Image (cartoon, rainbow, N blue to C red; front, side, top):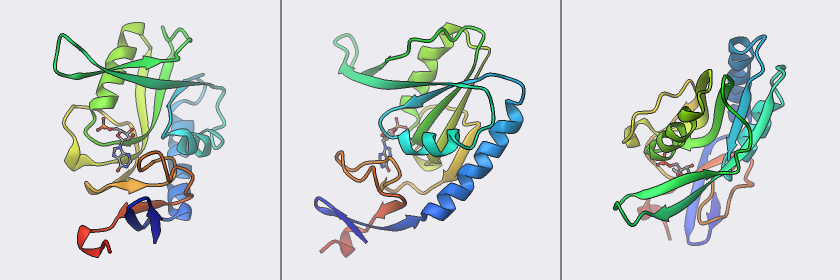
Amino acid sequence: MVTILDKTFGPFLSQAIIEERIGEMAAQINEDYHGKTPIFIVVLNGAFLFASELLKRLDLSCEVSFVRFASYENTQSSGNVREILGLQENLSGRDVVVIEDIVDTGLTMNQLLNQLRPSNPKSLAVATLLHKPEALKAPVSLEYAGFEIENRFVVGYGLDYDGLGRNLNAIYVLQDISSQA
Ligand code: IMP
């Protein structure tokens, strides 16, 4: 068990299981991008550990870039508009793979892909470590998804609870309220 602030988390996915699956994802990407020079766009903060384990298993010539989201309330709409920051590279004609930690509602990924498409990449794919299919609200196609998980809150391996827990080397799941002391 791991306690972070007021919450208790139990074991969910071990480091060995996570890294075995990342190895399989890397093998697939090596095959799919053989002879190409893709650019990987890592979504910070959460994807840093997954990206590092995935990228070091690739035997491709590739570039790696990092983006963050800036969130702000748009005065014209009630929605929370998120803009990508930090992308310097020209994506026109490039094979682009976005690396994310988790796709939950899919709203973040949907907005990110919509902001990348006008740059006219040759191809655009997504690699996510985790995916919560039940929580999906926006259509997103996930070419490489590590684990489909239930709609429960998880931490570790890059994912945080209130900024904490990102450095845990395995993934832990929030315990039921009834088991919280
Ligand atoms: P989405 O826009 O709902 O798909 O949310 C994506 C973002 O929400 C992820 O990049 C995470 O930062 C965060 N998130 C969603 N589910 C979890 C979770 O179970 N644990 C930690 N962060 C999460």
